[in-house]
Amino acid sequence: MPGPAGGSRAVVTRARPNVVDSSAWLAYFADEPSAAEFAPAIEEVRLLVVPAVCLLEIFKVVARQRGDGDALQAVAIMQQGQVVDLDAALALSAARVGLDHKLPLADSIVYATARSVGGILWTQDDDFDGLPDVHYVPKRRPA
Image (cartoon, rainbow, N blue to C red):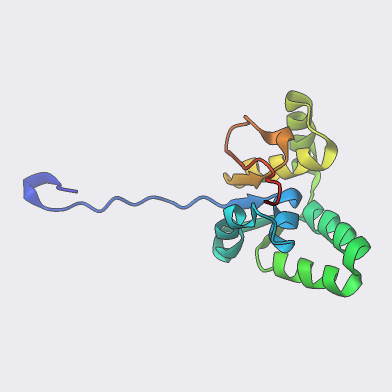
């Protein structure tokens, strides 16, 4: 971009963290039709933020469907990102966004985590559809 006196000026943009909710992780791990939508957010590990509650949800679902070994592998992949634990401040923030947006408990924690890091929430959970800073991908049915 031209700057003063015909020179050039670099434009610096800060990449935002990616917070991926459990619905998107499950689509990614199961290679569902929407998995390709979530792959860039998940695979850019330096920007990946993982709410600890998502580890719980993914381990529980994958262990029930495929066993503990696969569940441990799934959460190991997730832990390549920055895991954010639920502390008192995040819990109160989650309570507020849950009340304001009528979100279930885990969704409240995930959304509050995304807001706390200034990130984009990637999801196919329609509870988040229309909320600010959410990349919502409707769940696709296999062809």
